[in-house]
Image (cartoon, rainbow, N blue to C red; front, side, top):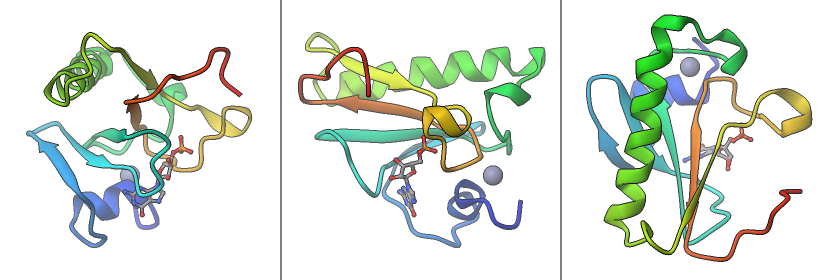
Length: 114
Ligand code: 5GP
Ligand code: ZN
């Protein structure tokens, strides 16, 4: 995907603070962090939004969630708590159309979200 931020980061065309990588996904720090820990967990395959998931992606998405929990744990937030969010389309505030799981931790996070 030519104009996709995540694909450009995956290709090394845009620098990012990568904190995890395996064959299926990477995780990197958000450039505009909304909490002391704010990482994005991103599949290597371009998937525009959750609306585009197919049953074959179920394991991938499960791994992304489990990876978010592992990263939270590595940063000391397993017990304190953390939030994981996928934004989908305009009203949820999705701006990057390659799915990414936000991992936020390190401060009290209000509910309901804005
Ligand atoms: P969305 O709004 O689509 O749910 O989240 C997109 C996220 O990507 C935002 O939190 C935004 O700060 C982050 N972001 C946008 N551009 C860049 C960039 O160039 N590098 C990194 N690391 N994050 C970015
Ligand atoms: Zn992409």
